[in-house]
Length: 365
Ligand SMILES: *Cc1c(COP(=O)(O)O)cnc(C)c1O
Image (tube, rainbow, N blue to C red; front, side, top):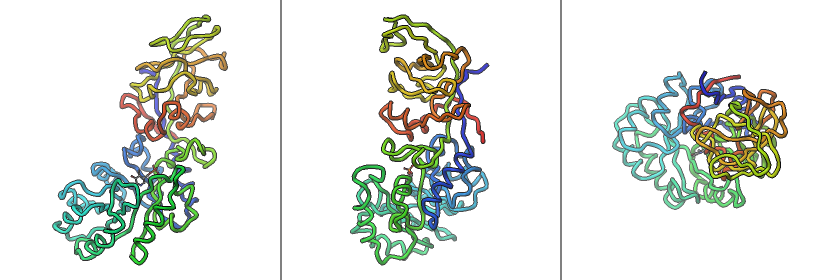
């Protein structure tokens, strides 16, 4: 029998979350962002559930090829554009739309030989200072692109640094609006957080939104809001089983470094899941875990292949009992990936993307 650790991808929840994002912006089109192999879920595994999107957005050219190989004929957007001139050949061949964020990418396009002109998304750096033309040079870039026979249509795009946080997006929305006021073309600004929090504002919604994390059942502004607040459902469950049970006396400790010591007698379960499965090693005593669908906690350090959990609230637990590291238990109980991520000082994004290769994955409804 293989180790019992298993990841389950929930296709009905992917559908639900995509619909939820649509509901936030009824008159905009929705890119399903599937970069990083669909946030660790697997492009091939999510494709059927997400093909109701208006397009797929990603970064890696091989991932774009995989989408075309699956039969997707609709829009595909490369969010970072091309990395070298010959990538443009693939864009021409597979009809990939691509971001243009720097003058070198305009040069490459100007030198590119193609029968089919490209649709490009011209990116503005409205304050995040990662990719894009500064507002003051945006119009010149647009004018240059607009004169190229290689370009069919130019859309306008920016990305927010603080859509999930305190600072907010008003300063970036303003910078984008000012610099694009009389430019034609479709607009795309919003990630998950901006779509959920500000989707009612037409200046934020634009023509295309680009949700990623919310589609995968993580609240972009956790802990301010959780998935229940946003009506999102977990799309990945990491589950396993109890493979050992120990009875600790007061003063006994568990695991490497003896970082947990029992104050009173406690029954613990030893669980087949560790950091080599993608469960974060930074999780410590107190991190929530579901045993038999009942909420309990991690005790001590995370090992490579095992953790220990408190069985006090689940006296029925024994060898073979189901353990849910995040996601949905058999009894329907939910442990949001965001809660586990917070215990490790990180985000749901990192956990789902870091699911280890050794974990088998199944696709379920
Ligand atoms: C990753 C990404 C998104 C999606 O962001 P989420 O926070 O996952 O919704 C949108 N736009 C761009 C440019 C991105 O790189």
